[in-house]
Length: 113
Picture 1 (spheres, helix red, strand yellow):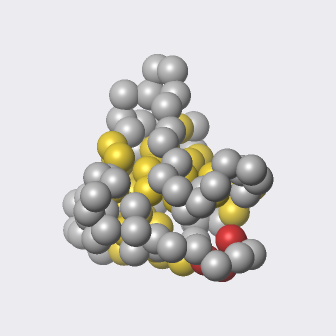
Picture 2: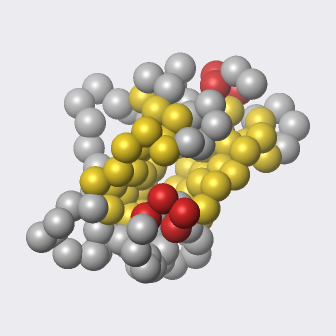
């Protein structure tokens, strides 16, 4: 799978890679398996850079391998609460955040690589 032809989505606690030519899901994971605690998935944010996906949700920050969704690292952001995590990155023009008010709206991003 070439990441140039991949669309990444985050919705309802799941992250998936979608083949842009066929629409097929090439891999899918549930963030809860990486969380280690109870999480609410009402909203979040995702962006891709250098073969990695960065996802902020429920007061946690995750870094996943864009090839297969495997966890590279996580940060529970202790002391920051359990709300929306807004992400910003200098020079990354591809990030799209889901609305904090729309619990079922997916955040979608096309890989920059």
